[in-house]
Image (cartoon, rainbow over all chains, first blue to last red; front, side, top):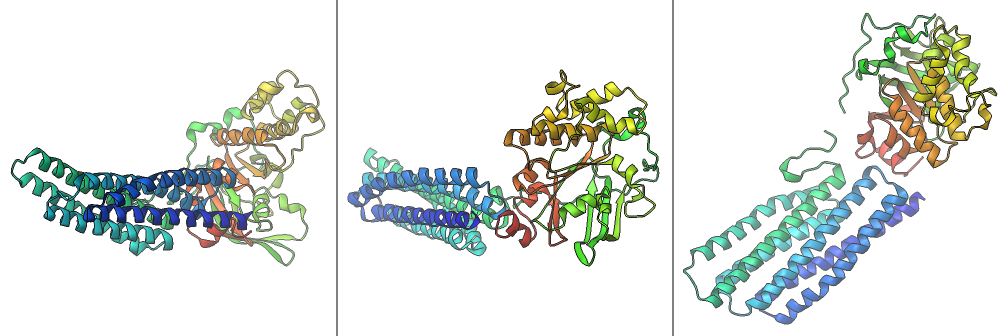
Length: 223
Length: 285
């Protein structure tokens, strides 16, 4: 039974790693759709969301099945709890990528280049953060997970800078205003992706050590 | 987990070898007075040998009052031997001898001066398989008290014991029927009622649910939760989920040694020792 259970855990771990890869691709393509103003690329991101949604449900059902049938404890319990939460965060990241792609379709080639460049730099930083969080999960690397906590501050700074720049611009015509709203929405969704990536990194710390580091507390659940 | 413990205070209730079992004078029966940092049983570098074989190796453990302490570990790890030492049930094995100390309150359990029969009145035991006497339900509960010269209201004692064992409602109309007619789960609760009737201080349970079905097991587990308000409970179990459900503190033994003892919640989520982690997750044992 134990060897079988260990194999099932490994299958699940591989499965969520594959889903993480799919979500990473969606974020990359969403960012590229902003850069290249390519509606077909944006549409592809939107189309892949249903795959992520279906996989999220399948993974959740498998976690529930393993909890019910094997009643795991210790590190196995922490792994399943972490997978349950990471699964949810990945699905939300995919939703954010879809939001970015939808805004990219509206943006077209009209967006101000300086805003677009900032969004691209922000997108690059977000993808790096997401990669670190996913890599931390795959190899249970605490150092990699902790880098994600630091990286989130830089993303927040990009988002605030975007708001500041738009607010500083003079009152605009309605088509420019629509473009500004799209830029803000893209920035907001990138910022949300970074938040979800940070959540993943926090879940990795819990999975590996049992410590809950959410909300900057660093408290352990047993204290 | 940090557990601060107190030594037995100078005016604590001693264990006189001739104990009264009159409930009116036994302060330990009052749940409101339970001090959960008080050490009821203390093992200090206790080793137990069967001939040359060391079954329990230098175990040191404090059992706290009004807590449920679970002892887990693979077969042959010494957990039942350790449990049985607490009320001298190992005395029946001729080659058995001990080293180190095992104390119940201020009584040295291992000392030849300790009256094992008197000790067993205060440190009762419930076994793996229900073992009611081939007598009526009423006699099963009253027997121990009557042969120990109980002077109180016997009927009240029987009713109270059956109620505490969560069996009263099921047997109140058939107290004078043979206990053998009860189901396995009812018989086990009858054995608990029988132990309670002697008004013990500590209840030792050696895999009390291993012969029971899930419904009877759930009733015993609920009962353990209620019993700890009045008694200190120590349970040996192979069922780790049961240990997780019913106990406050869990001790993990392996090859005769105590590997780790901590709050149950911590043992089953974030144990400190790799061997504990490997055992609870089924990697060995």
